[in-house]
Image (cartoon, rainbow, N blue to C red; front, side, top):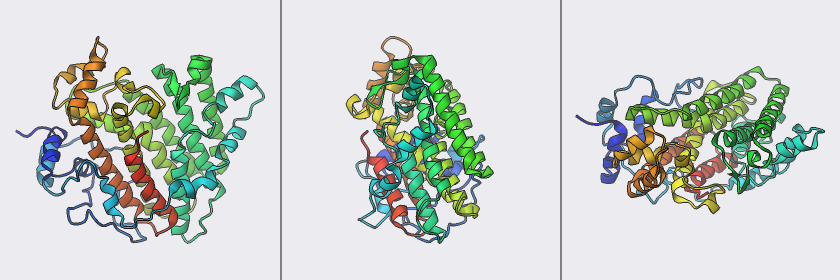
Length: 421
């Protein structure tokens, strides 16, 4: 009998003759993927979305009841894998001069951190220092950049000027505030002592004050959200906070069954990372366009690029040095977390199963798991999966009317997939 879909992924990609892993995931998500071998090299450039009909309220990556083997048999041999070294997303877009996302978003992001500090203004000096600590302009600012570019692309698509609406700019700011508050709390939960190349807030000021600082940043973000004055936007962005908490709880647990374990990992990845980007993109679309299909395009782009971003992050934990990442390598293993590379490696090295279940807590577990991953093709398979999510993000954003900002989002997706830190 054939094994689970992701167990067979290694054999398929090695032979380069079978369906993509992500295609199966999308099929489980309630619709078949639109890719085929003949359409991989082209994208839909129409300004109107197709009939995806995927409800944006659903955050499930995979339905609860699945038949993995039968689904794979139906889809087998529909799509060839690209070579590992290439970024397969580039074949989707023929324009060799895609706009640089950093250049296009620079004007809108220049004063972002100053405006955030104004939102966090307090008279108590120590609390101010705590809250301003990560808003020093040295972060990647990927989330507000995506939100700004998405807002401008949607404005142009909706026959408006490209300039940001005040509410859209506020959402970009709020997205960075929610993200930073979650980092502060994550560092406390994980006991981390380094973030973005410097000591964490909990390391400098202690856990209690770090928790309060995170709470304060989150409350300031909530106040800014309320001032936008749109109940639908408030509801959409409130979902992000719920997802962050649920995702953190999911990260504290694991699954015995291998199929369930991978689903658990992908759903946790969505809730902890992609939900913020997806719902922020959806929120800026609501402010400029009443078409639910446009809202869904924005949401799906954010969801897929967000998951791709985290999958690459999980790969970099095994392939990049601490100086590049700004945090210790093998951090996830040391926290007892089994990410994509480990889950794929477990198929070649079943010894990892017991380590995963005890969260790498025994003497030597982290070092042995590290070696198993490097000896396996877990890193390559996780890269394949990230590329598939990147393809879907590009497919979604390509449905908008052409604009420099839309093209910059395509370029940004490629940069996410090829980054090394």
